[in-house]
Image (tube, rainbow, N blue to C red; front, side, top):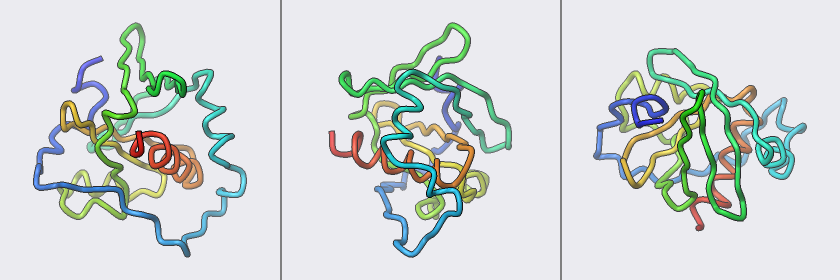
Length: 150
């Protein structure tokens, strides 16, 4: 799949030793009640579509599948598959942790429906556009529980 296809190009402000920033506990989401971590994982265990977002506002629809036992997930487009191991995720990027990024990247991540991950192996980032803020929050919880503690 390659870094340029499903990674936000030039998150090269490598000053960013951004770590996971917890969401303020008072944040409330109207659509959050419909999601639990388990239902979110179930949605992607058998594979489902997900949108990868780019700083220029474009999105591509990819196929996302979680493999809990293998501790990885796949991101695929057409016949190209990228396997991302849980322990290759350095940090979560979201609206509460984007101060040191470029302005175009900050604008992308300020949406309550967009969440990004930075990979250890490439230092590149991938941003995902979710259908709701609640689903974005579940992606955050998934990364926090399964990937940043691996």
